[in-house]
Every structure is written in structure tokens, then in C-alpha cells.
Image 1 (cartoon, one colour):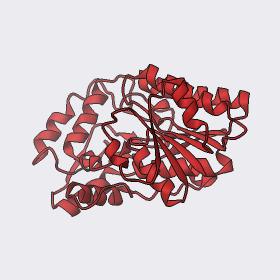
Image 2 (cartoon, one colour; image 1 turned 120 degrees about the horizontal axis):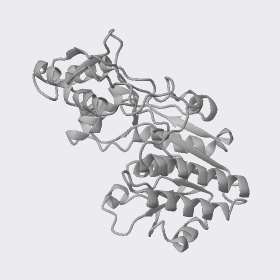
Image 3 (cartoon, helix red, strand yellow; image 1 turned 90 degrees about the horizontal axis):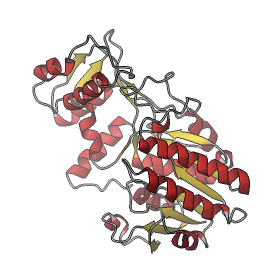
Length: 334
């Protein structure tokens, strides 16, 4: 199958290209002119096309000779117009070839719910695909609109399309700081500033001040729990598992017309994350009982059961790979 990957040099796209090649697919990668990340895919056996997905002519030419399109191009942050219009252009071009395009899969985000409970109370846990969509910022809104664009064109043209919703994506060595006193402190601060979140309590003061006093250093691993001892939970996802999820949605007939959460194999407790960090770095764990409990989860059983999603990177695997990347012993793409 010949597959177009938009955003081929991106965090997910650069890993997706490698997984497609390993599965013997022919790959066409779309990148921006003067893309600062182009070296991520340099030397790979792919066809590269360079242009702007806001340019309809470029998009139409890019999809003209492919069997499937995996749309990963995305700007994180306040880029509403760009994200909406690039998704519109890609979907429109695929819909024009609906009889020939085997699959369009586009990346959305768990931010459509959102599952950021420190900013907005979740309707329930774990957060699954039936959770209400309540985007809280322009970026998340662009993802909701993008999903509706895909559904609209699919409904009118017969385009076989699917959507994946990754939780917080990490790559490289980004995972290493997520189990620290500094990160726990940052979540507490955001929770205090958001009255609509699960962490907000007007009388709990500034607990991060006491936490930071207890710590030996800001990077100290922190096994955070809530007020009655239940663990804090963080179910993020490795970029390589996101790439795998895209391929699952491309190759499974059950994906058509559906949206799927893509996340780590299981929810990760802070006790687990801190223990692995302590084991591999020798830093002592700080056990901290917070006045509130943070839960960031993203239920992936639908993706597992429907399309064969089998995430490989749990907390230990992500941390070990991140340390190897930091030491220059691995590249984090495979």
C-alpha cells in the first residue's frame, strides 16, 4: 500500500514513517519547506513532497497517487485556523478520491474531552470515547472541528475515515521529568488556578510550598497520592505507540467511522513512575500525600478490542529508552 504521511518529520510522523517501512508499505512524506525537523527522516527510503497543506493544489497533487492518508500534521498551541484548514484541505482531497482511497486516519487529541482534570472536572473516570466533548481552548476546539470535518466529508462521499485521540504524547527524554517534585508542584499550581477542575479547593492554600520544602531537589522522584492515600495517575503515551495506533486504524475495517483513544498500556501511578526513576538514577523517592488527587487517564480498551492496538511502551520502557536517548545510545524512533 502506498501511504501519504502528512507531517512526516514531526514527533509522530517521523516514527510512523519508520513503522510503515518496516511493514513493507511504500511511503510518501509531506513536509514543510525548510522544515527544521527534516533531518528526522533524512536518508529513509521514502518519496518526499514539500509544500504547505494550506495550498489546495499541493494537497490534491499529494493525494493523487496514494492508497491511504495518515494525517499527522499539526501545530500545538493557538493555531486554530491552521489546524482546521489543513484538516479540511486534506479531507476534501481524500473525499474527491473516496472510491480509491482505502483509508484516511487523522490525529485528534484527548484534549477534546478534556482529560486534563486539573483544568476541568471529568464527567467520569476512566475517560473513554463516550465522554462528552468539552474543548477548553482553541487548540482543543480545532481538534473537535477537525473531527467534524472528517465525519462530514465521510458521510457525504463514502470516504473510509477514522480518528485517533492520543493522550499526552511524549518522545525523546521528555518522560523523565514527569514523576518529579517539580512536575507535581506544577500540577498543584494549575489546579489551584482552575476553579472548574478536580483539584480546586479554595481552602487548601499553596500545598506546593510545603512539597518543595520537603524535597531534597526539584527533580526528586515523587510518589504522590491524594488525601486518603489513593495514587495520582498519569496515562500519557509514547509517540511510537501513537504511530502504531495510526497503522491499526489504517488496516482494520472496524476503524471506519470510529474514534479511538490511544494511550499507554495501563494507567501509571506516581508510585510506579517514581520507583522506576529511583531505581535507574539512584535518587530517593519522596512519598507525598497531597490534599487533592490528580487523575489523568485515557481508556484504550476500544482500540485494543476493535483494531488490535497493542501499546508497547509502559513507564519502565519509556524511562529506560529516554535515559538511553539522553546518553546518546538510542534514537527513540524504534
